[in-house]
Structure formats: structure tokens, C-alpha cells
Image 1 (tube, rainbow, N blue to C red):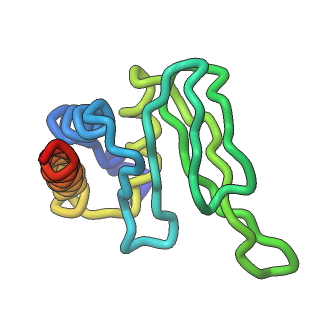
Image 2 (cartoon, one colour):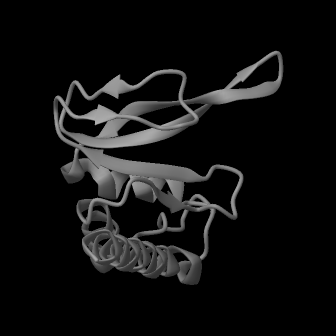
Amino acid sequence: MTANSTPPTLKPETVSAVIRALWSGIPQLSLLSDTDHPLALRIVRRGDIIDDPDSEYPVEALRNGIYQRCLITRDGAPAGCRWMFLCSTDDLHEVLAGATECLNAVEREAMGLDAAWQAMRWTETRKRNLARAAA
């Protein structure tokens, strides 16, 4: 990006798709997985417990909002993860805009489609599992 160019922007529809996917209850929404800085997000209400099998211990959410899964390394080797507060849903647009600066317009727009697709797959899997459990 040159000094005279405008920063890349995210379409409101892309951010809305990500927020809708998070509100679907998906346990982990993976965005930008083909980049050097992938994002694994989850929306949590204050007091909810985030229990991830890769985490050392369950974490209680101290704030409402979006949490990011952060990988932990010890002596250069992966050693699990922790979920940390990232932002409120109102601030997600700014956070995603910063995280997607290196992407072209098509990749930024595809992020919303990817989020919607992940949420749809998770919802369908959950419905199938509930139907099997009821049978």
C-alpha cells in the first residue's frame, strides 16, 4: 500500500456474515487459515466456560464478546492453546480490517462466505447428531 492509497476495506456484508456465523454457536470459527496469521474465533457470554481439548484448562469468560484462540509454545514447540478476549461485536469490523490488510478484495469478500459455510456445516452436523440421539 502506498502513502496515497486508501486502506483496504471490508464490506459490511462480510463482517455481518462473520458475526452471524459466530452467533450460530459454532465452537470455533476459523478465518484466514491460508495466511501467516490465522484467526480462530468464538463468541462467548460473560460467565460461560470455554472448554477446548487443546487447552490446559477451561477458561471462564470475564466479558461478553469475541475470544481468539491463541497457540502456546514452549521451547519452540506447540504446547496447547488459550482463549483470550479479542473485542466486542461492535469492534469486530476494525479488528478484521487490520487482520485482512494484506489480502486482496476477493480474499476479503470470501472470508464472509467461508464463515457462512462453516456455520452452515456446523448447524447441519448438530441437527444430524440431535436427530440420531433422539432416535
